[in-house]
Length: 241
Ligand SMILES: Nc1ncnc2c1ncn2[C@@H]1O[C@H](COP(=O)(O)OP(=O)(O)OP(=O)(O)O)[C@@H](O)[C@H]1O
Ligand SMILES: [Mg+2]
Image (cartoon, rainbow, N blue to C red; front, top):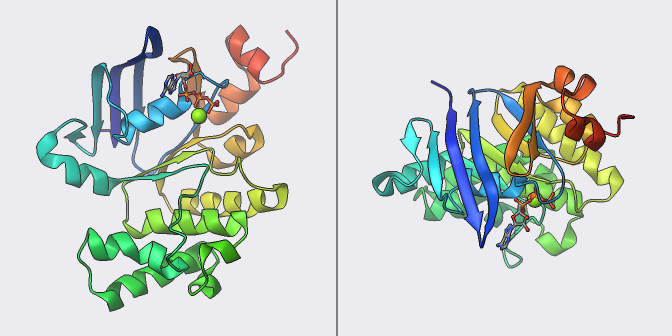
């Protein structure tokens, strides 16, 4: 069984079919890059998987748990981590406070143990030296790495990343991408929405191209990016038609 299974997923907003029947499986340890034009439904798809939006039809199962299974809502929330373009750090908490908060409040973990995990995660993303700093004293790239460390601290089975480098200056894009490449090599299962095709190429095993709320193409990264089968993807990638 795949870690993530999606069947016939639909979501409507107003009269608009934002997700028009998505079927998708993601295996444990896999990195899937999600690409597509603005408005194609990439964020909507991630939000449905993460339980932030409710689908109008279809089925999403993560690690054997159906999204919408009210009795297992908490289990599900613990299994899925989400990181967004805007880092959403708590400004009144230090870096360490941001990373330990959920461990303490949700997991009920003792302070010392939560701190130990936080430091290990901050080490992993390369900013252990900033543990005592407040978000306002960090660069965008550092803030995003804290947000990633905060997600990782809860050991999610599936990490959803929505354009996590889009708000960053070019030199900071690379440092965040390096962290994600490291996580990919460690076998963290990820779906990453990105506009950076070179990064998708470097980090992902498969690419899905979303077009008008449907999966237009999906397959091994090199195949999809080098030999797109549809005119829509060829145009999106800037191939000469
Ligand atoms: N809250 C909302 N209210 C109305 N329409 C919405 C809402 N959220 C999304 N949409 C519409 O759903 C469609 C898909 O949006 P979505 O944000 O998923 O696209 P996206 O692929 O993530 O685009 P981008 O690359 O710009 O982030 C768009 O047509 C958008 O206008
Ligand atoms: Mg989006």
